[in-house]
Amino acid sequence: MSRILTGIQSSGKPHLGNILGAILPAIQLSEQANNQSFLFIADLHSLTSIKNAATLQDNTRAVAAAWLACGLDPSKVVFYRQSRVAAFHTELTWYLSCLTPYPMLANAHSFKDKSDQLADVNAGLFVYPVLMAADILLYDADFVPVGKDQKQHLEMTRDMAEGFNRTFGDTFVVPQSRIDERIMVIPGIDGRKMSKSYGNYLDVFLPEKELQKVTKKIISDSTPLEAPKDPETDITFKLFSLVANENEVAEMRQNYLNGGYGYGHAKQALFETLVSRFAPEREKFDYYYHQNSAALEQILQEGEAQARDVASKKIADVRQKLGFA
Ligand code: ADP
Ligand code: TRP
Image 1 (cartoon, rainbow, N blue to C red):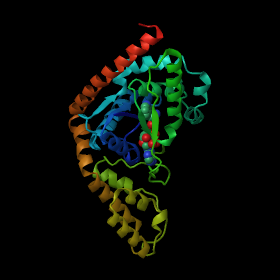
Image 2: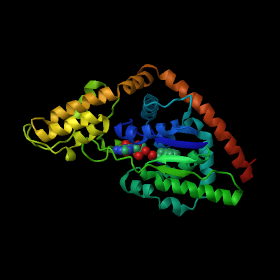
Image 3: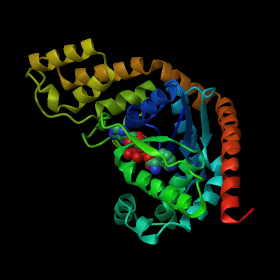
Image 4: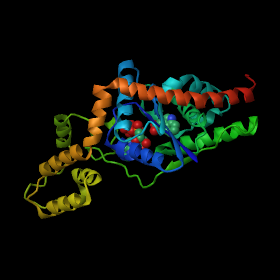
């Protein structure tokens, strides 16, 4: 049996890029026979960027509802908020911090990138990879599916686990990253990577009218309606081909090549396909996020009790090894 673990931050609302690039692949992996999965919301990590309690809580609910809407089965997966197991995560973060050389953190790509770009360069951003290592090592994870940008964080986690095991005896499973090179970068409505930070995302859980409005904003060139168009360079076509079926994609491609088919038509087709392809997900999201947040809360609390149980056993072993018990 392999234990799979991954976390997703709640620093914004979940979007199509998160769903296709992270949520669905992690759920698929968790459904493979013999895998046991821990999927959690990294809301302590989100505090590095969000300093508003209501926003943080709202994003966390939206991200949790999105996982459930996309098919996470809480009877098979341990599903929890990191903040509700905070005592163990932060305790292990401290122990690992004391064993981690300062330059390892100072040279991390993501810290350097963020500290160049952000106005708020807090110490949390600096310690971020240690908290991430604690998230992983507390649960004896074998595999950690993440995007390419997290590769270095996983290497640091492995270094911390190996260092601890060498000094204090075998304690942690040394995890492997699972970087799926096939997962493509989903473009946003302006053609750059779809990202919360660029404000160029499609939130497939929006009410229909609002979703339609966003699809209308997708950037296109000024080729007139009658003229043939190049499907390969158009953002609407790219997005459509990620969510429509093969026949629909072939038909739209032909429409582009024939001419007499405007970008407005394509955007409307994309909007309709998003609504129909994600109809069950939209309904479930609505249930957990808007109608029945008590059900969502209950599911999370059940997962948190299981997570605490696993984490407390690991921490007991670590305390013993360090001389604190
Ligand atoms: P954002 O860029 O919106 O802040 P995150 O960095 O929080 O997104 O990403 C959460 C997860 O979603 C990561 O695993 C990341 O690889 C995946 N993801 C985010 N944006 C995209 C995208 N445009 N295409 C594919 N995967 C994405
Ligand atoms: N840093 C990850 C990201 O931004 C989120 C994360 C936090 C995570 N802890 C984790 C991912 C543990 C995998 C395992 O995408």
